[in-house]
Length: 460
Ligand code: HEC
Ligand code: HEC
Ligand code: HEC
Image (cartoon, rainbow, N blue to C red):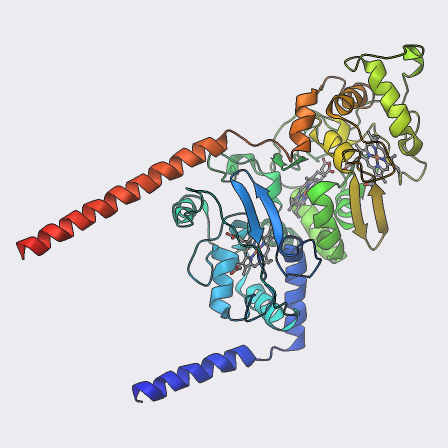
């Protein structure tokens, strides 16, 4: 072949690849993998165009934007080859060779099998509506804008092995391990992170703060984890967002339940539960069967203007704002549509962040079982009161005392932190320093190379 015909041949095979039609059952399988992976939750913006991008993810180092991953050839990933797509999803490397930030959970998606990856590609090329509109792009401040610094991070922390069955375990356990570790990426939220934002493997699923919400310890520890839950309770929680008398899903877990877990088959949810129940226990403070029904408003009646630091203020705020739904004594409704606030993981340790987050942000969750809604008390955009930081702190301290572990307290400053989107760790500074040092080293090496090359030139 001449050069020209070779080029023509490659051009032809490339356009054939783009026009390739995948069988419907493969596309459907890919749709299911995409659902289990919750691609839509991150890659859909406020305009609600599925996979159209423009979804802002606040990170300690600045806003990261999940981009348009529809098959649009102008603004999406329509020109991605299957290999490029696989590299982006499982290795965090974009088609242009740039590294993605781990806000895209490629560290978990690395577990996705080759067969599922192929199906996922078929779905994104053929089952998704192209959207020919640009997405916001990430532009982090120096030095975080240096995407190549992720190469070092990947070398240290990313494990690129796909899922391998453990022959010592049942087929159901292995299916669950695959779904939880890979597509379901539970650990990206539930595992605490170390100094450099890597998941701390020794603390697998032991609980971590993600934005305003705390993703609790879901190891098999009876007190601090969910070791006391029955299998059907875990399945119910994943399918509907609630395990009665134990916990309800708010925040990012509500989103994961709405878009992803509630749409999985009963067998797959059972498999996830079987695996989760077997995750090694990591101890923590008791979180279930805490607190009692009751109301202390009477104790404080007649105090005209209670000090926000005393429990009476919290009791009054509770009666005025919460009792209508959650009951005068915090018992909830008979059917528990409005849940009891005692025996509730949000009023149990560790910390009261989820109680505060629920009050400020409300709960909003849609599944086939219907729409679950609690109004946010942190904004003035609804008919309900808006509570300030001091009021929320007083309310929280009363609730933790009456309905919860009896010891946890929060300050108005703690509430302000949750209102602002959650604590930023001092790790940011550490990362900033390390990356700056890394960048400085690279610069030194570059300068040294230039000098050496010049000398050689002169010598020659
Ligand atoms: C937790 C949020 C999250 C989930 C879930 C997620 N992504 Fe992403 N994804 C991101 C973010 C954020 C970026 C951009 C990161 C960056 O700019 O470094 C991204 C980037 C990408 C890119 C590169 C796009 C480009 O601009 O070239 C592809 C492809 C991609 N994701 C595909 C997927 C697929 C397929 C799934 C489901 C299997 C998925 N993502 C699930 C957050 C997510
Ligand atoms: C996007 C982040 C995210 C992902 C992914 C995620 N979770 Fe969660 N999860 C949370 C948050 C936040 C909460 C707390 C919700 C609340 O209390 O309102 C939570 C709560 C839970 C609870 C209730 C625990 C309790 O003590 O109340 C269980 C069980 C759970 N998740 C299991 C899972 C499993 C299993 C997976 C993976 C298949 C998973 N989660 C994936 C963020 C996440
Ligand atoms: C209009 C009714 C209504 C009012 C008023 C209301 N709630 Fe709720 N609350 C709900 C509903 C509905 C849920 C979600 C139940 C579920 O997730 O299944 C909920 C859930 C919660 C949860 C658990 C959230 C989670 O993610 O685990 C907490 C904590 C809570 N409410 C506290 C309060 C407090 C404190 C107040 C008063 C400031 C309040 N609620 C006012 C209806 C209400």
